[in-house]
Image (cartoon, rainbow, N blue to C red; front, side, top):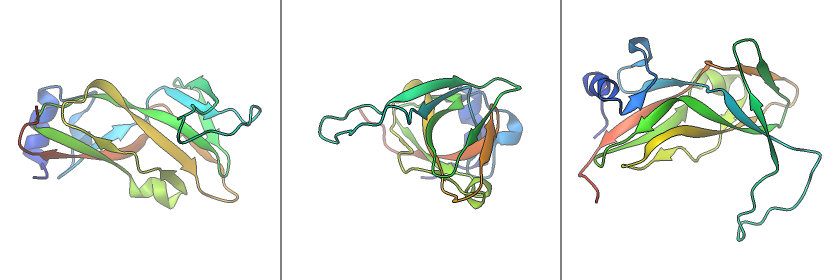
Length: 157
């Protein structure tokens, strides 16, 4: 069952998701914001990655603060994180969705947005890509970046 406003308020009060203000709670989702840490693809060290071997991409860490922005070039891929931390109980799962206003600017989130029940003590990793051909996208710490919907189900072991 998809959870709506009153149950979402309960989840926030129980720290199932932390770092949320009341104005981030919507009718059936909670808005999340961009955290400080980004991993930016290192284009100077090109190599083949193997799906079978699950090689890690060569990434450089960038830390955003209040006066530093990251500018994504056309086609650029980064790993970002949410400011919010998740502590899902055994009967709640969640799914991340990019805000439509971000998509209209050409920002894309790849599809790895599912959070299984029991996932605890972690921020959400966001796989972001500038899909435009000729526009740069500036992102900053604290920018609204997406929304999470929560589902209640039978508890899992």
